[in-house]
Image (tube, rainbow, N blue to C red; front, side):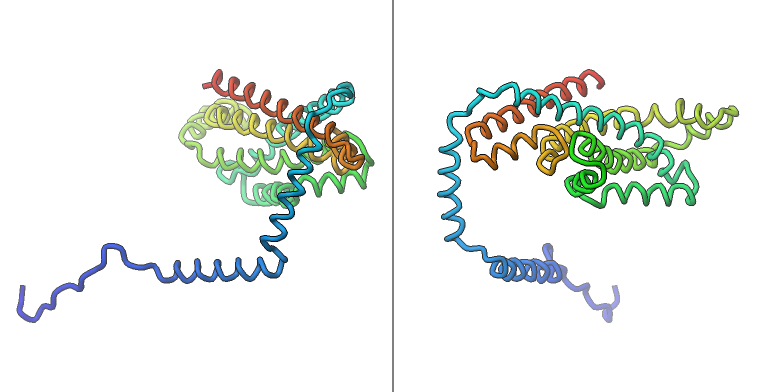
Length: 264
């Protein structure tokens, strides 16, 4: 080393990240400012806790006397969830293939991705309100809204899963002179089948939960019964409905878990 060579500057092991610190400081300041603009205060929180305790007191014990109405609403929600999931999965399969950029040209995948993004752009409750206004109250509006939500979720994830596959198998099947459907059946679907089944099971669970909520806006299911009970201040029946919904979701979670374990 020559005498004129200067030693390398020392580097700190944990150098401070000033841009990140400034960003966190700005976020904290904005949070404090937003809380003042929204009227948040500890007095309102304390008041809400007291009102919540009184509400819970009126919900105990749950009243299952009208179990026929409860079962009818749960069955309708279950039917909405299963039907919407089946239709949504059936539509998502071709849409996911067409949206995959490694299989479809850009002039096909681009518009299809736009349709999928449109399905994902609005919350399913807003979509349910639109369908209620368009086709009227009832389970048909809820089913249509959850079909749109299912397409937006499953088609997007399915397209991304296809884009991650190995193209060697696709090229090998194409080299045999196979058509498009055989390429999909023997080269594409075997690589993404397990993930696609997982997406479908998750969406079925999600639709089962969401079907209880779309009824609040008049789209069928147990949500309508729950909203009516709230309007009548029938809180013991509200507690019974909530417990039934929780039991249904837990049962669906157990069944889907066993299906996933059987498919591994």
